[in-house]
Image (tube, rainbow, N blue to C red; front, side, top):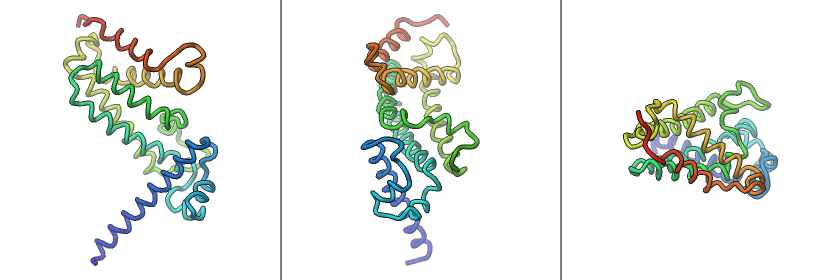
Length: 211
């Protein structure tokens, strides 16, 4: 076995161990709450020492951020499959549903943009993690911009540049998620994610706007 092949195997083994640790952290999150996702608890469930966990994640914050990045990448992969759909209303609905699933599992626990904008936090986060988060979110926003640049949707946007539509779409989907999914307020006031999104889509695509 050459040194190069041996090094590649070591890298792959390290990545596999990192994924297993992330999976265990996710299990703790869903079985309990975000406060229970600690380096100590993850180490106990993994049958490892805390020092072994620190070999892969410098802090709890970095562990949580890695969970977020992993699942944002999954969200992006799901969004990429929507490029074959020609109907912009169907794309918007499918995108909203994909985000809903992500938000229920991870988004309501961890604020993406706080991590993108905070220069300092209670715990250190490596620059490589920050850059990976920035690039992952950027790829999702780019998808939204490309969707907004489609010829079919231009009939409904009144000539607003696609780049300016990105924060609108993101804010609406995230805002609806916050109101209907993150607390009991959605049920208390009769709000339903699917209904709100359907109503919004009906409003947007009611009739073409003059450009």
